[in-house]
Image 1 (cartoon, one colour):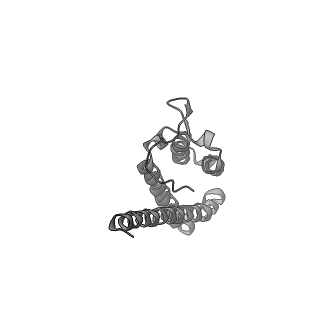
Image 2 (cartoon, rainbow, N blue to C red):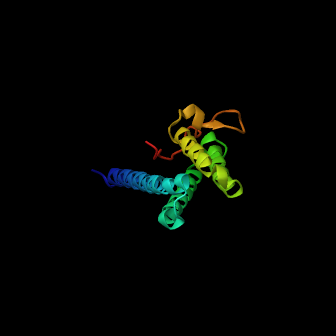
Image 3 (tube, rainbow, N blue to C red):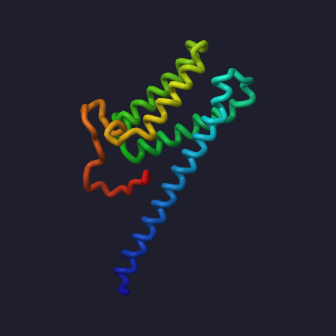
Length: 149
């Protein structure tokens, strides 16, 4: 094996390693987010004592913020695609709980349902650009690895 081809193979292995690190990091953050949301849900829906669920809520919010930062870093298109826009709508709905606390359980359940459509909806829905009024994907020729699988 020549020096050039071994260097090329080494770069490829580094690229593969980076892919796995990014993928596992994203999966770990998502798992923490789901854990935080799941455990804090009882507090929101059943008006439990804040001390029982607040730390889980903070975990959900912090991990959600990390996921947003990852998505924006990966692609600025996320900000104008429905998956990004609906995420900001979810945050707005959660903030509205402060203004209309009597609707807290209903708003929270709505946010949970919206989350399912954002995460598991068809690509044509998630990648729809509200600015361009059509589905937008990363431009061809971008050299980024898709860590979404």
